[in-house]
Length: 150
Image (cartoon, rainbow, N blue to C red; front, side, top):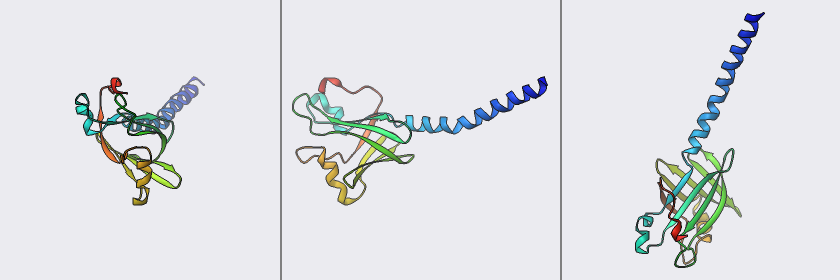
C-alpha cells in the first residue's frame, strides 16, 4: 500500500511540473516586453528636446496596458494615450478603436507603433497635437523615466 501511495505522489508531482512549464515560458516571454520605451530625442531631454515615452504593463492573459506620454514640464504634453492592446502573436499586440487599429510590434530592444492599415494613420494622430503622431520606433531603457519632465 505504501508503494502505491508513493507512486501516486511521484506521478502527481511529475505531471504537475510538466503542466506548468508552458505557463512559465509564456509569462517570461511576455515579461520581457514590460518596461519603458523612449523616442530618440529622450537622450537630449536636458537640452529642451520634446520626447515621447511608452510604458508597457501586464494587463493579464493576452493583454498589455500601454501608456504614452510626452514631455510636459514646459507645456501641455504633445501626445497622451492610455489603452489596452490584445496579443496577436508573441511580438505584436493590437489596439482597436472605432474600426481602426494600431499595432505595437516588439523586437529585441525596440517597440514600433504603426497603423494596421494605411487608412488607420489618423488613429495614431488622434492622441497627439500639433500634427504629431504615435507612429515611431521607441528604444527600451533600463532606468526609470525622468519624472522631472512629467
